[in-house]
Image (cartoon, rainbow, N blue to C red; front, side, top):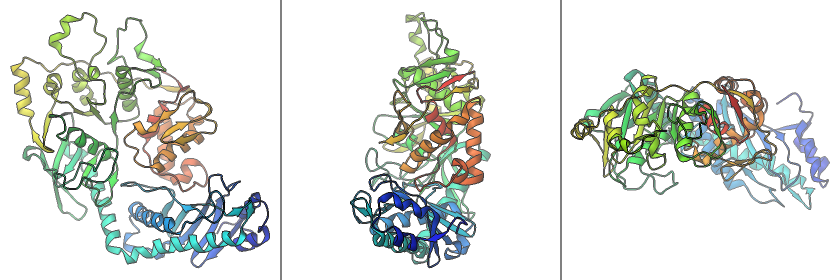
Length: 552
C-alpha cells in the first residue's frame, strides 16, 4: 500500500462515525487489507448526493491464469465484465443519495483498455465508484466498513475466482482478441484496409442496438474478393478483403449497404465473442464522415472541395459557427486526414451528396461551380494513402472511379466491378479526375475554457462553451467510458495544445497513454470511468469545440 497510509480504514471509520459527512475525507490517508487485497480511497465525495467516491483495490496477479498474463488487455476486459456483474448484485441502498452504491460503467461490445481494471505486471488494479453511506448527512461508520471491506472485496474476489470457474469462457474471450489483432496486423501486407470474415453476422437487432440480429443472413464473401488470412494459431480465416483505393458499396435500399459500412466502422475495435463481428477488422485509422448541419469549424482548408464562393470567402482557411451539410462534410474529411486517417467511410444517406458526386452531363446547366466532389478527387486521395469506402445506391460518377464495386442484395455481397465499368462506359461516364491537396497543418492559437465540463446524454457541455458538442455523432465511440476519456483529456490537457499543431498535440496524447496508461494520460490517479479512445476520436471532439482558434 502507498507510503501515505497513516491509519487503517477501520480505525478512521470508528473515529468519524456519526460526524458530518465531510469527515469522510480522513479516509484519503487510510488503507486496509482485506485478505489478499489492499484497499484505499483516491477520491472522497463531499456530499452523499455528489458523484461517488473512488476506491482503489490491488490484488496479486498470481490469482490469474499464468498462461494468460501475456494478454493483459483482453484479460482485464473479461475481469471488468465479471466485476460489473458482481458490483451490480452487491450494490444496495444504505442511506441517502448514493449511499451504498458500488459500480463501474456498463461495458460495451468491444474489448478495450479501461481504467477500472488494469493488469499491471505482478498486480491487478481495480478502481470502483463507491457511495459512502450516511443518514441526515451523518456518517454511518458501520455501513461504510461493510461496504469498503466486505462487499467491495467480495465482488473483486468473485471476479478473480471466475477466472477458474469460467476458464473456458475466459480463454474464448482472449482468443477472440488475439484473432482480431492477428487479422488486423495482416491488412497492410495484403494491400487491404479492412476484412469481413465469412460467417460474420453484421445486422444488429434494432437501430441503436449492439446485439446481433437473430436469424440474420451470415456474411459470405464474393469468390473474386475472398482472401485467406492467418489466425493466431496458424489457422486459415477466409473472408472478403477490402482493398486499398476506392470501394463503392451499391444496391437497393434495405439490402445491407449501410449495415456493411457500419460494421467496417466498428472494425477499428476488437469485439467480444458472440457479437457477430469478431472477424470484421479495419485499420485503426478509419474515420466515418457525415454531414453535420450547424457545426463549428475553425480554419480548415476545404479548398480542394469547396471553392470560388460568391462571397469571396477564403476556403483555404474556412471558419464558421454554422456549417452547411456540404461544408461540414468537406471540413470533416480534411480534419480526419489532418489527424492521420487512412480510411474514410461515407454513406450517401448521411453525407452531403453534392460532396460525393455530381452528374457531369448536367453541368452545362450551371456556369458557376463551387464544389469539386469526392468522385473527382478519389483517385488522387487514394494515391496519397487515404482509401475510401462509399455507400451509394448507384451513382455512375462514383461507379466509374471505383477500384472495387460491391453490390449488396438481400445482405449478400456480389463483386460487380466489371459490370459497373461497362455500365459507365455505355453511358459515356468517364472517371472524373481532379488533384487532391492535403490540408495544411493548423496550429492551435486559442482554446475555450471548459469550466465545469460534463457529459449529458453524450453531449459535452461546459460553462465556457456557447454550444454543446454532440460526441454521439462519432460512431467509433461505443460506450460511456470512451466519452468520459474524451471529456477528461479535454478538461485536463487541452490547454497544452496552444502553440502546437493539432497533429503534434495528438501525438503527445497517444504517447502518454501508450507509456503511462490512464495515469500517464491524465497525470494522476484516474477514476474507474475511462475507456480507450483513439487520437482520431479526440480530434473529432477538439475540432467541434466552439471558441477554438486555429491558424495555418
